[in-house]
Image (tube, rainbow, N blue to C red; front, side, top):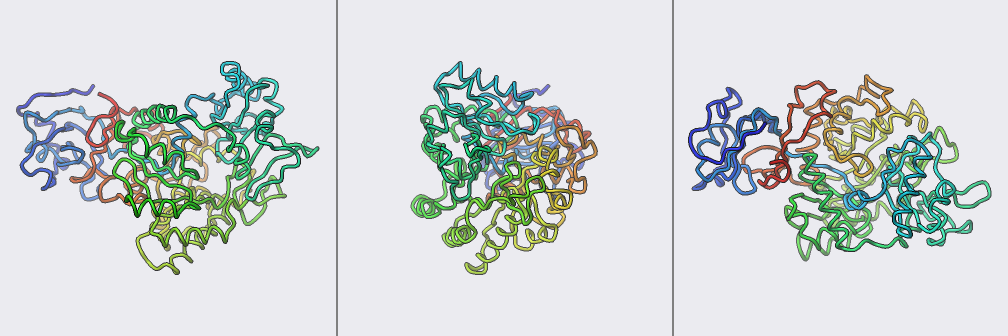
Length: 560
């Protein structure tokens, strides 16, 4: 149990002197003529800084780390310092999540849980129960996965009888596919005569009638008629979601979105500062001019809500068979995927956004989509000249082996989500065959190549839990238990590599590596404390780790 001291006086020698761990470092500007506000002592800290990877104490002034190491912390401790003995607990830089759909996930918390259903009957029952509880109110989540229900895609016929007066538009877990009931199809004006939109597909039965499944850009046909939640509802949802982040040791999230809703909600509300979660907001690539004007007029935000990034879509998802590959899908020879944004349009938008000085990120899943984006990035750099642009590929999921070195060579960040590997690993071979698994979720190969690799969740597509992501990256055990030694085990990473990918590499991916991602004097005091040292426990125990405290900006946001 942690012991909290609010008194002055000599601190125990054990708290401050730990052999090599007692390295004393102080930030001169912060320490000048002042004293610590908060001292965390008696701990086992992984700093993330290779020059002094471990220490026993951290001192904080305001929102910054002022001192590292027992001697330095002791010298700045006064009667006013709040001293917390963490009693041997493990501390590290607070987690940063590189990819969340934060507002969507926040709003979905109050929707029926469809991911962990036991089968079609349970799926239908949960939707029916929600419809009876709130008749007429749109049901829009949470997400579902047909692989966990026997493999058959659901259709409107599954749920029509339990939702006669309640429209339904619920997403598959990858967010690239929606299931609609017949009422939602009618409200959206979708009939057998509705053409597939560019970059999207309306699934149809043998009679040509819509099944209720909409893929990628076809989703916009219904999204435009779904009522938007009120500002009050959005803020309440955001507050609950921020609490969940803190409970999982997260201090910052990146939100690469293809709409403006999350960005606008965060800008109009003080919720980020009030609750203490940092956001890096990216808006649609095609709206680059609008956000560029905002940057010119207002700058790029503050340490709580930042912007200046844009996100485009090169393709869809593997689960929806809309990820773009060179070859056809093994289990559907009629398709090799979808270009959500045509290649020429994508290149033109990246070129313009980059020229405007924006940070460009593009979603790419399939091997052809990844090569397309790497080619576009290479072309844009030649045209616009060299600068510190830090192009990102979101997901970088299936890469041809000979394309892996290009990430490091071109300075492109691989923004990946480890939980997807242990989820998709159950069935990916059926989609693309054995040969294309080489280069799939290639975390280890990318890191060994020298690329910047960052980790995140893609919440709500996967759980908002970095410890689960770390375990997924280092063990690669699929969630069905079928791969106890790891799926594609050559791509395993070390615990420290995974921790770095969730901290300093994510800071780098958001142009913040000089102020966060390490426990270093002068850096933001964003710290996570947990009940065990995840660098030394058995791999199987990592998911059992409990977050004891989350500190963001020098304030305790979770724990006591």
